[in-house]
Amino acid sequence: MARVLMLLENNPYPQDVRVRSEAESLARAGHRVTVVAPRGPGQARGETVAGVRVRRFRLPETPPNPFGFAIEYAIANVQLYLAGLLGLARGVQAVHLHNPPDTLFGVGFVARLLGREVVFDHHDLAPELFEAKLGDSPVVRLLRVFERLTFRASTLVLAANESHREVAIARGGVPPERVAIVRNGPPLAALEAATGCRGGALDDPHLVFLGSMEDQDGVDDLIPLLERLGDRHGLVGARLTLVGEGSRRTALEDRAAAAGMTARVRFTGLVPHAEVPALLAQADICLDPAPCSELNQHSTMIKIAEYMAARRAVVAFPLLETRRTAGEAIAYGGCGDLDSLADAVAKLAGDPALRQALAGAGYARARSLTWAASEERLLAAYDALFAGPAGRS
Image (tube, rainbow, N blue to C red; front, side, top):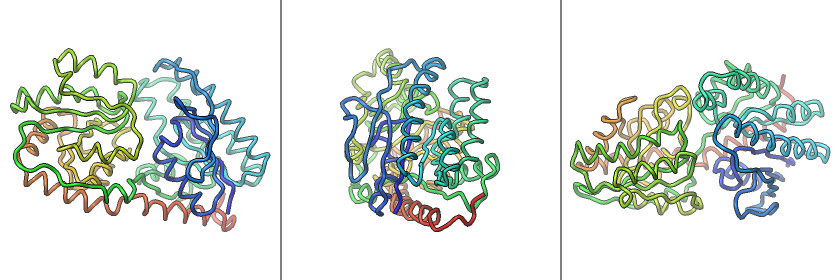
């Protein structure tokens, strides 16, 4: 069993669901896992969570603009590089690098020089993510260089989906045998907690959005969607709950107030992951308004699998990886067409048989998407990594 050091910049731990799932799976398998991550409000500098040792560093509050990103990432990278190099000096056998951004390749190259293993956990397409935030800029071009260096430093790449695997091979030059697909997925307990949904035609459908509230997530369309449901379909009683946090939350609150919808729109903020199934159980229809951008086409939205595991009807845009996840088990609007998204929601609200059929189809599909299946692939990839040097460049 190996000593594994996970380096995470983008989210606190254990709030990052993918990192927590991986770390706990590796710890249960006998690996000694340490995670270094930002320190969230009220969190201790160090503790052990479900068999995983956690060390946290403080990040300042920064504005969501290029200058703010630069300050945040500079401070985080100083902390993570120090932790990574110290861990290697103390005998860590594998450094497990999480993105975005792709800036930890220096730790990876030092690990390779020392004969250690380097796992690159490819959460997001960082160049596309920052292009969505900043447009075409020198920062995006620099991130493409960083991405290639990170792939080059790695002995194993964990791809979140088939699209990321294709990027690792085609854009990163990683041999196919060194790329393993480890999808995000809800725990089996989420399926066991699923409940039946309301029957009958609904004139007050309860809509739920789960996840990050950033520009690329399409959340700015949620209040206009609610307006369309009232204006076009007479669903003036439709309600919306947003579960999560992000830089667009304040703008959404202001938009809801301006539209006179404060009483119909609820913001929960961040909630413990164990509470998510109960919140989804309150939904009639779940939403993913992520637009058909290049970034989103190749991203797996874990919320889709969580919605289906909760046995709820889902409406989304037809993103490539969303279709790979859900197939025809959810309802789709047309890319860039908010009216069609509202039409799909209204159709489900008025057709209980269709709601039940999609909820059942999604629930059945979710059984193959749970973390248990991903855990098998993760542990197999780690077993192969430490079986010997065969297959490495």
